[in-house]
Image (tube, rainbow, N blue to C red; front, side, top):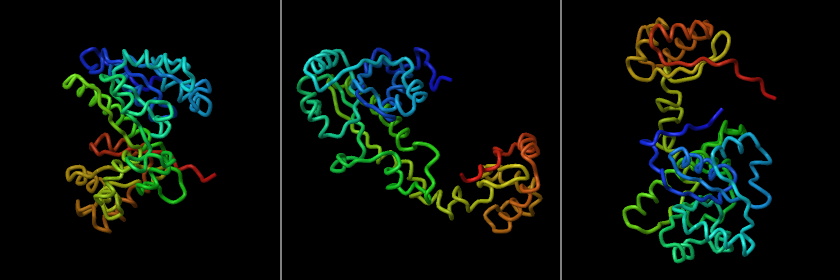
Amino acid sequence: MPVTSTPSPSLAPLAGVRVLSLALNLPGPAALLRCRAMGAHCLKLEPPSGDPMRLYQPRAYADLHQGIEVREADLKTAPAQAALHEELTRTDVLLTSFRPSALRKLGLDWEVLHERHPRLAQVAIVGAAGARAEEPGHDLTYLADAGLVAGTTLPPTLFADMAGALMAAEAVLQAVLHLRTHGAGTCVEVALHGAAEWLALPRTWGLTTPDGAVGGAHAGYRVYPCADGRVAVAALEPHFARRLAEAAGLDTADLVAPAAHRGVAAWIAGRTRAELDALAAERDIPLHTLPPEPAPQ
């Protein structure tokens, strides 16, 4: 199943833009795929050993490289360096995911690039910004640092990597706008740690803490066990909360009160997923039923 669709020409803001990527693993390829979806011509250079993702998750690698031209290039050799710089003469944006020291070893730090290719833009994906850019890390460590890891359970997806990919695609748009406005390339740094911090903002603001409206304090915004599974209820706005309260036979639509929590939980516990799906459709209540939670391995 395709992970993205090809936009119509009127919705292809990067049509005619050439993006060259040296970025491996997940954030860079995911960002490149978003660029392709926005109409860019995308070329990726991989080392002789290939992208590690191709080895540990071939399905993900295949999905992420739909429509992407991939070539092999050993950038530690002079011929590959020459071929790279020849390609950069007709490239608008270079996408990288190396630490700054690695870029310097390859002669691809921004100062050198900008002097050699004044119209070239660079979007540099790093782990953390500024002085922390040399620190090793991955999605899990960035999420942990941002307070988004609970207990010893792994997060259900790679939030920082995927949010960082979206931010990198946004940075490509920014770089292209800057080039069209000023006629010169610019360098935009995207930090995966910063992406994790961006995702953590609702918790920082108190929205998703236990006393927050979408953190458990509101009985209309919770996950409950039902007779044959679970149900995610999102009846947060007053009109949805009122419909949920009426369906549950509560005397009040104040779903923050402890009694409301007990009432909603007891009402849902006695109903099947099919009954809840039908009631949601009939009364226009936002909820989604789920199978029972898998038993711990």
